[in-house]
Image (cartoon, rainbow, N blue to C red; front, side):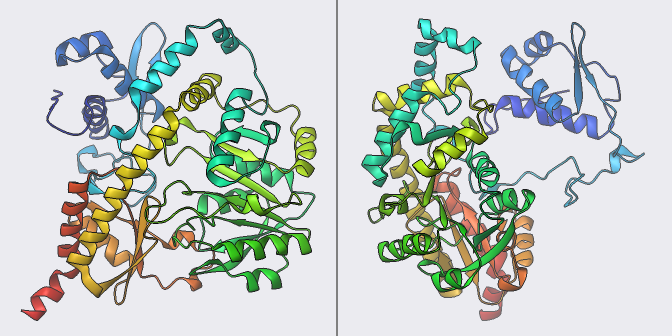
Length: 471
């Protein structure tokens, strides 16, 4: 029997989904068992039908159940369950394990807090667009580079906030940063198959180029960003970097070094892929102008995204291509249709036209600054000099470096207290370059009180034995 609790922070549809999933995994609901109709279960649980439908669709997407048109939802056969379903462990590090442990506090990076998304304003934009004759464009393939009014608004925003010089024709709307990079990895194949990457670096970006057959040249990250001397002595003709808030270290590249980087590109006929990640989220000083704003010869490809400030699930990012590469892009991808839904593009364009984007960004940045400040204040109070903090004053995460603790131990000790923290090792291309003594803490999905409570438990998890030894 399903039970729902309105007092929990977990949405009702997730409670329905989780409980049905557990019954399937435990063998209580066998293969071909027909789930109650969405209408019947909604009436039984006294919830909206959409709640049950969303739960069922999630179960379908993960393969637990199958929807049969005109008949209903049926439980699938799960091949990897043991003959004794009741013995399935609740926690496993195996990728094939279907059940993941719930944590009291999850310091996940990249997930935003549900309360920070402007649902009412976004719904208003969607409804407004659907009420116009232009909504007929929903039934057609649209501009291959993205909707022109959105590209115009992005151009204005970049010029005002980042100093980026471009026209709408240079902008390509993409479904996330990785799609931006997938297009670039194809665009540059005949130019060079070697690319310099920061070490450490965003593994999701690096993997795109690895899968595209590129040779990765790891370049050390210093306190002020990419090590230019290493770059200059490498064979790289292309360099990918995150200069405004280097991921994951948090290093900020100063303006003098940005000029030197542009000179490197000019002298070597090179290409700079500037992922301007987290440039909007600077908490105690003004952002440094984008490298693209210094480029006069078309050496810099600029990438921006709305994933960290609006919603990751919207999959809205963009490229700004220099004019020399724009013609190549159009020729190579002339038969590619744009992969971002038309309606989302139009909604964002209207959101920006109405000034709502700027207001949202100011409000969002203030909320994240308060969380950031609360995290630093609590860390200094509870941890003192037992940790070193990297990446402060910007973004949605920090790194904690320890003197005498290894990454796996830190993660396991936190897990024992019901807290999820994250490894840093995966961001290194060469593991030998990593000292194996850091963890990553994201804070954007947590409240300020949850940050304090979670860090308090982490102190107990990581330093309890030290405390007992001193008393």
